[in-house]
Length: 131
Image (cartoon, one colour):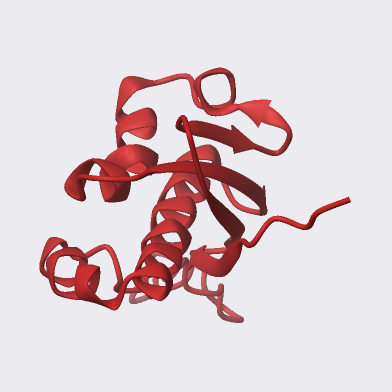
């Protein structure tokens, strides 16, 4: 049994975490949580999000396998894009410049702010009355 050489990277967004494994192959394939990516992601925008790093580089074909958990479906797609970009840079450091200018290597830190005691939401206060 021969072990395939793979490159693994982690991508994150909000509360989603994606573990991305890429191996160079004869044809491209994209598997998310043991499902085809086209079946896992319903909208065209989400499909485009996960393919963006591969589309921005030309050349070799990659077999991409992803384990993603947490968050919503859109957040998961962005976590996959982040992890895939990191894995591609690990495989070829020359891709870093192009992926960085596209903003795929930045971990978007925005997340929902926690609710504070005495407030209705994170910052929304109850209606104030003078008397």
